[in-house]
Length: 92
Image (cartoon, rainbow, N blue to C red):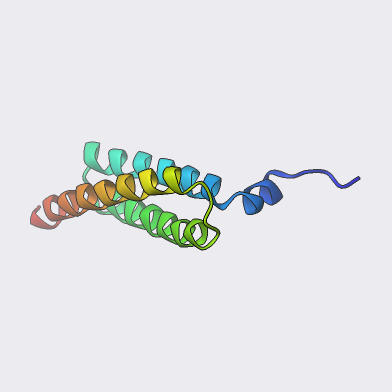
């Protein structure tokens, strides 16, 4: 019997992958907010972009849409927060 790896499990559950990438984006945005530097902002934008890709995948699979909707709202908040941090960094 084939070993059930984390990777295959994530591929089987797009909504879980989306939740995980939103959590990573959340941490990246918090990091950028506490240390408003260009590299932290860039990392946060990359994390948000990754989460947006995972969002599209989860929506296409119509998986756990209530959880997906909550994550979409959270991602929108993160996007607004990081844009505010980016303004601070650019004004330095």
